[in-house]
Image (tube, helix red, strand yellow):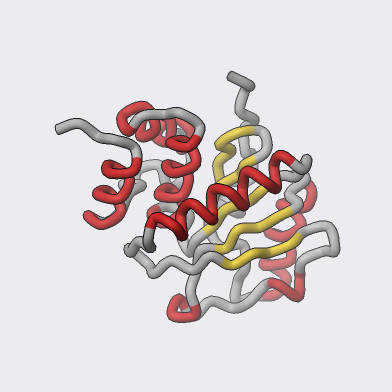
Length: 172
């Protein structure tokens, strides 16, 4: 397995590398435009070329698209906070992430806090890469260790836990 880089900017933008081509974390915007620009700059400096945004309009977050440099694209795959979507939706997200990475890009996946929806998608990516349920959850815990939100349960709702267990073949 390729070594996973560390993310030294967790105090500014909570995030964690999954693979050298995949970074997962929180909403990179901010009510303060300068702060949002700083976060976007961190992503650009990390070589991020595509953002997968899992937030919804109901999250009522300030848009950041106008702050993105031309080198970063954003694709929206809305998932309700603490909720899940159907399997086809997760399949589309995983396929999009894989296509971006296969094309030489680096992807940033985010929800609002960078915990529940983001970890659910990352579990699906790991499952598509051959991880079983237990190993995927262990891997996510390892990757998040040392981040400022590592104390928070990363699958935050029963629906997220059930979806990941079903998709990754958890055994009772």
